[in-house]
Amino acid sequence: MPINITGQTSSQYTNVSNENNNTKTSINNKQEPIYTNNVTLSENSRFLSRLEQHIESLPVIDENRVHEIKEKIKHNDYDTNYLFLAEKIIKIEYEIH
Picture 1: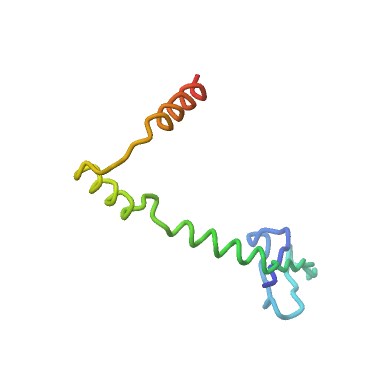
Picture 2: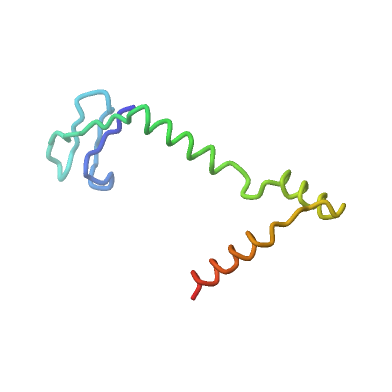
């Protein structure tokens, strides 16, 4: 997927021809060619772009997991690892201060 980069803003041009033709423009009534660079994205970067879009579309909170935990708490079936929880709280306190 080539991307044309001209380094000029469109407000500087008074007449621009089609991208597929020999691109020329009129700046201050002079005909000067615009030199373009083509950038081709690798398959990995296209994949990463699609992955990023997919991740952004996911919900921030896993509603199924929240429901599952609520049900376990409601039925007094949720096991808590108090030592693990205490270590996490202490770690957070050290990071804050």
